[in-house]
Image (cartoon, rainbow over all chains, first blue to last red; front, side, top):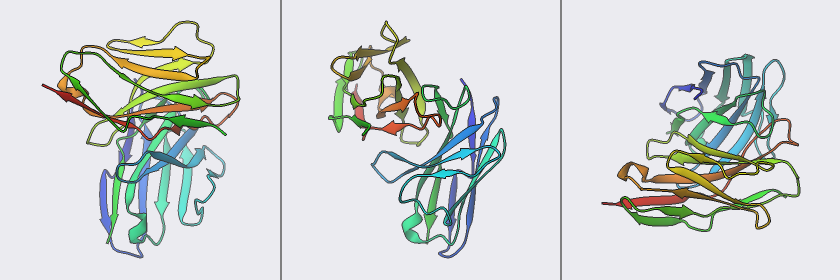
Length: 118
Length: 116
């Protein structure tokens, strides 16, 4: 299957700092990548859809100025949590669709990034 | 509104036995995809199986099979011959073809524990 990587896998930072998370599709090109957030013992919630070469589409209630998304190439999307606060502590997971991002194409997930804000 | 419902927060199964994890969905769109993912304690989401809304036959992938009942809007996952390594969270998810973005809607998950 397709491989998606995330870096870093775990990050601890002080309140007020910014953290960048990278999501890469290693063996395929992804015009669309997705960013999810998962709180402990809860399901994944879509934060935003990252489109190569254009602005990301954010879900309702997600602050686009706080969670900056850049999809610079067909294999890389980044999520930057700006001025992080303890309530931003969570598990962030990216995924990439194989086949152009249409509705029923399989998505492959990265291993996730666990963010802890002190 | 689209919705995925997993009514079993936790399930236990004896090793080598089969187990069914329930999933029902709600959508008015005629074209959609249904997915099952496994999430071990390490956190990564592992794709297991996919069923398209127009697929005539139930999907199968090794020990995994999807019991797709379109009229009932259910897409239960059946794991045969359970192994200790199957212990994990299992998420049912749906994606809509009408959505060009293809994002997934997840259920709340079922925690499966396999007993030796």
